[in-house]
Length: 233
Image (cartoon, rainbow, N blue to C red; front, top):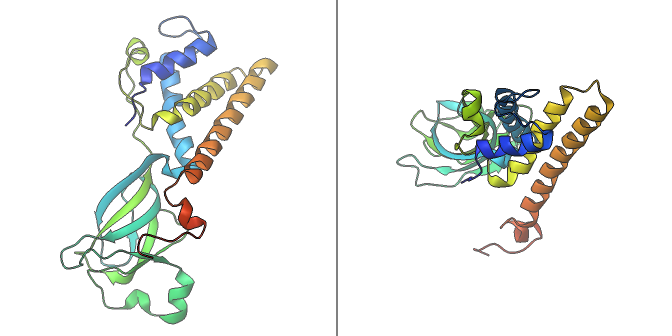
């Protein structure tokens, strides 16, 4: 859970911008808050697991399923949770594998227990399950969700807000860089500001790349990726 507040982010940004007035002169607090909210969308687009949600969802009848309305893209399908499904885990497979062996799998008898799922990067909000699900089937899934924006408040309240940011504290520097990139882009007709905007934009992208690499390096799955044995081996 994050402890960095919205007010702290706004104060960091204003310090770099040298925006000394309480409510903002060249860059208003409301403007900065809007870019903070926008940064969530940009971060999740680059690093979807920055805002992952683990949730049990009800299936609809048939093979095609969809993540909740707040979702950005599916990350994983974990297990069955409906009564009578025995909590069986769900394995990922490819559409080609199912199509090659069971051409009519979309029309097979629905089951409360899903065995496999298919995901297509071209349709990230939807996935297919085999066997097709009954309307009583339930699945525990992990998906990426864009955080809800912070509500606009009066300018003074924004700078003093004790509401915590929607992402983990490790993303605070990237959020600051994103806001600064947008702020300096506002005056991009000046060469110096254009350079500052480009610098902060590059820093934002590089920071997310470093975050992704660190996640891989310190993942509990790193031994499996190297060919190590799992717990049941």
